[in-house]
Amino acid sequence: MAKNDTTLYLYELAWILPSVALPVGMLAALLVTAFGAHIHLPGQAATLDPAHIDTTSPFDQPGLVEVGVGRYEARIIAGIWFFNPPEIRVPEGSEVTFVGTSRDVIHGLFLPDADVNVMLIPGQVTRITTRFPKAGEYTFICHEYCGLAHHTMAGKVIVEPLE
Ligand code: CUA
Image (cartoon, rainbow, N blue to C red; front, top):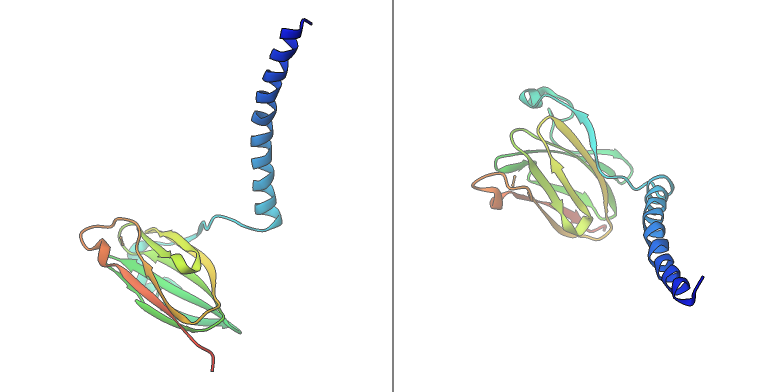
């Protein structure tokens, strides 16, 4: 091989190696986070008939339920243009699983200070768990455009300080 050929070969190698290493690295990161750290996209937890939402468990009783020590389930129905319930109260340090759905069009549940960012879709049940280590008021909003009063669609989680 002439000297020029060797240089060209090294340049080629310098491009090819990272282009192989990048996707392999990303795939490895995906496998490690999914199976090692158990990080998953919040997916469709169940389906239901949106026409019978008021008689389908758990949405026949929307609101907050204590499911364990310091653990709560917040069952939330979204509709134009409200969240039911619009407000939930939990003690500081609680773990809250939001179980939500929509009764009409696609809505969103965005609670930026607690890493909640999911869609609420008619016919589907969305589940996502988060923690509230600090007392305070946490506003959640609908972040999927759902019509005229979309911008008014909001609610809050009130985290009460421990005595
Ligand atoms: Cu509901 Cu935007």
